[in-house]
Image (tube, rainbow, N blue to C red; front, top):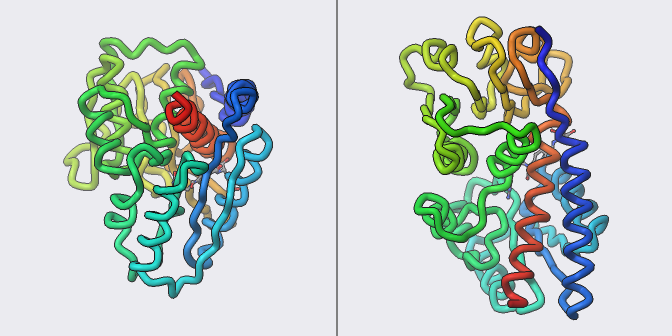
Amino acid sequence: MTAQLIDGNALARTIRGEVAGRTEALKARGVQPQLAILLVGEDPASQVYVKHKVADSEQTGLKATLERHPATLSEADLLARIRALNADPSVHGILVQLPLPRHLDAHKVIETISPAKDVDGFHVASAGALMVGQPGFWPCTPYGCLKMLDSIGYDLRGKEAVVIGRSNIVGKPMAMMLLGRNATVTVCHSATADLKSHTLRADVVVAAVGKRNVLTADMVKPGAVVIDVGMNRDEAGKLCGDVDFERVREVAGWITPVPGGVGPMTRAMLLVNTLEAAERAAG
Ligand SMILES: Nc1nc2c(c(=O)[nH]1)N[C@@H](CN(C=O)c1ccc(C(=O)N[C@@H](CCC(=O)O)C(=O)O)cc1)CN2
């Protein structure tokens, strides 16, 4: 069996088309959705990601402003800038690109963003809303993974789902979203005693560790859906995920590639959240 690919690029394109249509409708009501992106420092990967975010926004009719700040920016100055953006009614979404330089407390920075503009879905209020099933912004990466499952018509009710990784921005919210769809969810992590015993039972595996070959073919139940959130480089410098893609695809039923899987969906869901922030503000 060779798994079917879940094409993140194609799905993201469709979602961008939907966002463009809704943005047009909002503009006709006199509202221009606007995303403020704050980049602190010179991290090379972050520079690429924010450039893509600006291009995606412009392509769909959203306005994006990219503020570049030096790595030496003080925490007080960054927090003051966020507070000014919170108070600016023309700005609907605020995003601080991670990782931040070490002298900046990411938790404090994120908590300064107004929950109404937290389009990354990282604020404690957003996490709490997801946990209790109240309206709020969902973190873009797990939200994108859920959309990928929806795109293949996958019914999660009663299914065994295993999430590998327990980060606040992917693993934990992913588990909540899967739970919200009535899957039976297991979260595995670095202290899990026998990872394979869990993944072999799983109908759906989401690998979100940030380490190559965390999931190999012998760990996958035939026909399972495998979602790869990882973003790593192999010895040749080629982008790859957490999953041993070539071998796992011979066992799985569905699989997401890296690149071209979860990454583009993360960016697409940011547009959805930004548009939604603007729609909510417009009433
Ligand atoms: N404020 C945030 N910071 C970070 C987030 C986030 O969601 N919000 N997530 C990651 C990085 N990230 C978005 O910012 C991100 C990473 C990668 C991609 C992507 O499209 N990847 C492509 C490949 C790109 C390449 O060639 O390098 C793919 O997988 O096809 C999108 C978003 C950490 N920081």
